[in-house]
Image: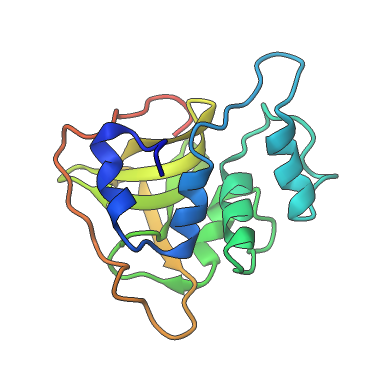
Length: 177
């Protein structure tokens, strides 16, 4: 967890939900600009059985990222996980967004999906893929929020709780999220 930005290092001291632990390990993965592709991102599509549906890392990949994280954490995938808004039907509704929950947002007529790492008064702080063309933590306006979901068969564990952060943490993303 050494690759966490300084203002999110508090996550390294927590017993975090498995999906969040998997996601943190992928921080810093970037898409390749131009004609090339990052083989790691393309490998995720192969890993979750979407190789024929996902062939270039400049295709939106937030759903692919959450899909590989869910898969590695032993969770099932929604129908067509590449479509961010399909994650709004996955698992169980979370009445109050909490650590490690899957959050779904509007993005024009499309959507965006990422994992909750905290919130301030106006934004959710989210760890996701295809955020400024990489896996990173950004802030997303609460006004764009659609749904919070989780996949716990025995109820939400104690380590899945809201995390309140100062507004100074992270950067509000204006690109792709």
